[in-house]
Picture (cartoon, one colour):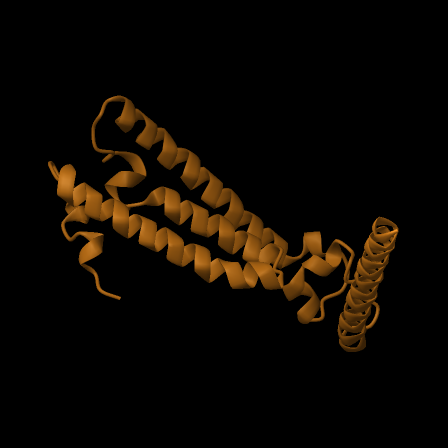
Length: 179
């Protein structure tokens, strides 16, 4: 008899859990609806779930029409493609230097300390212009800071282990700069 009562209590607990989950789902739907209503009242006619709503600057500045043909999209494409070109160029030089177990001092590495990180940042700027969302706006400074710290750590390792035949641009170690 007691096992039967215990089984009924378990069923009741499962029922309560299902009811709680349904309640949470309803609350989430209400929150999403309120968010859509807030944005919709400020920008009537915008479907926030559509692809074009992701072009934040285009929307906020009140432009109409196809966002993919706007100046924002063209400028962002230049940043993205330029960053990808820089990245491919830098990695080619770095790969050859690693194969020869030498310091990368040719190509972009003759002028810039970390061209691959600069390339990543250019690509991120391009996407920030083209496809801004709250998440990308929040993550951009975090990623830039992370690349800076990574570059600083690599510089420190370089100066401790490999500092021979240093190009002029690398005369002052990055890790000596204070923030």
